[in-house]
Length: 275
Length: 220
Image (cartoon, rainbow over all chains, first blue to last red; front, side, top):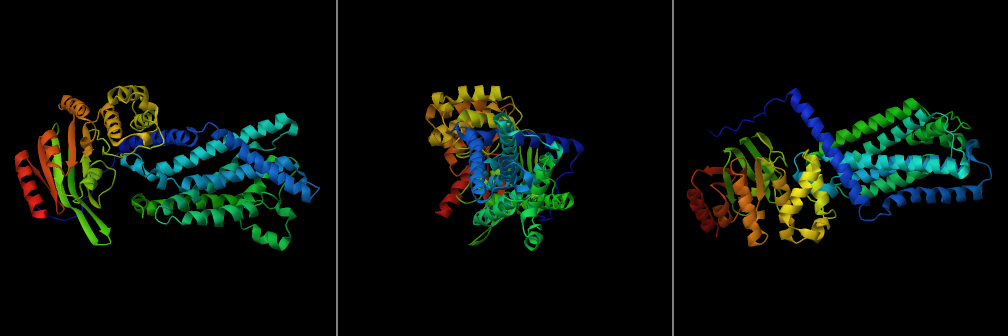
């Protein structure tokens, strides 16, 4: 009676898979709505802040830049140049930042069997991407109405570059979300090592052309630098980058995404239990 | 029907390996209220989490036919900074139920009044469990998994729940874990005892209770 052989669960059929997918879709949607409530429910000013914060950043950096140099980078109008660097970069940094607390801050949710660690992490990332997409659009329309004349050269290119930034954010987000329940100090690392230096060194405030060649060679190992060059080339009629490489950027983004999913897969059981 | 097949679960603690379930094979019958008794630390909560698929076993599997609730307990899945209404909507969405219906049923059954639109963090333990039970009743599960939580709340309200479960006896079953034999005696038709990694189901409630009091005296 007490045989200790390992028993396999019954096989999984096609109907089980479609069932599981529709449940997962429902759960992710429910989580997105719930995250919206927890983020903005109590303070109505929350969403307004999502628009004001990048505006302040743009104003500050335009101010700094204009006080040092008189010309605009690559012939692009300075205010739009900053906007079309700062907000898309948030797609990487804030998506990563929001996702990394996904497991640790939602542990009670795992009492519901259909809620998986994947769902809570991705829901946070998707919400952040939706919000930033909305903010970006609103700011561009607002700028145009304010007389900045926003004309996009290749909208699909802009979309693709934003997609790559999001993918980088989701990939790194999965890595940190899966590790931080076991090693909480990794979160300082993510902002100190990844967030800030990349904010300064990814070409948000400058273009590759303006960097001395020997330094540029090293800076172009950074895939975010490539994506921002490509993004501005697609956005501005005035600017075409000689350095942005779609192949290099896409390879990095896809590999980062895959790496994030792998780390999550390897860590998820341990991550639920925590320290 | 819920059937545990060769289920194993152990935890590594600083004090060594703790075997919670050692090759457990049990079938929980339909339409019965089954109590699971266990001394403190026997692994009752882990067991009910495994039955409810909130946690995977190390090996073996659990066969479930019918809809199984999440483990109802003191904290059970709700977020303190959301209101009861928002939490109820969330539950409705993840179970694919009508949010309107779940909201209305929960609001009425929980008798929380104005507190229904107040964040859960300002609730007392009794109010929290009232809410948790009301939402789960709204969902019409075939199996209700209960982790100790019947102990909170006032007497009139406990009776209300008991009656609601009683009404559903024909279609719904309850699996309740507790270290308190009074809770089991009042609410269950039969009982199982979790001890030393073994789960033994007794057909007669009194046999289970007798063995449990023996375990208790030995532990003391």
